[in-house]
Length: 334
Image (cartoon, rainbow, N blue to C red; front, side):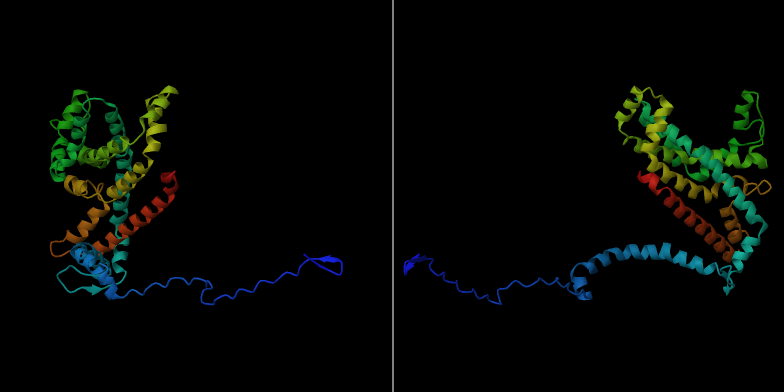
């Protein structure tokens, strides 16, 4: 503070010197890190070549035994060949030959009939068996072995064994058992009405064991508290199965269903060994028709028609599987 001429005033403020910024120290916006261009040399040094060398045997095996046959099948579907004479390109004629074959509609109908019966009996039976076996406190391991035992038996041996059981005479095993109850004898494999259900019965017996083991493994992951809570609410056995077991196993159930549909659509062994498509073409299936196209003639089969029908079956199953997975995606993830 200063006094001048009797006036009181404030001392003039001194301005601070301006700070000069060093342009080299000014923060500049960071540039995005540029990714180094990957060259074959850097890829090899990073372990890519070693990984490729490890994968090479597997790729060769898949290429020789999986990918090459698929490509070869697609090519042969548009050729007329019996693998003896030179192949001749025919375009879509093989597909027209299969489509115009009067046995084609019969084979498709029989395949759908077999698949429907197999789903009707072969789908719920393994689930019911697994639920019953999981509820038993003792002997669970023994029942699991007995359930899986038919899967261990070679399929050809199982079919030939059941073929003796299906003897249409009164001394046949099944007719003898039916005779104890005053029933039969039944024609089994000799009747167009009985032949396909007989094939489904043997197929269910032979393949249900693997599905039972899958369901048993899945049931171990179900929380037991849910069953106890359902029991406290007064739920019986079937309500527990429907409201607890089935929702908890919905993902497994969807997978086993699509696998069973694909498997039954490709049924071959049972109609080939049991009836060879008879009687009266009542057990001719799509795969049996493919076999007849390829190997039915001892002088050389029509492999072009056989591969064309194979592609048609593969295409139908691929479209069906894609649609099935798309429609059930939300339910399986819920």
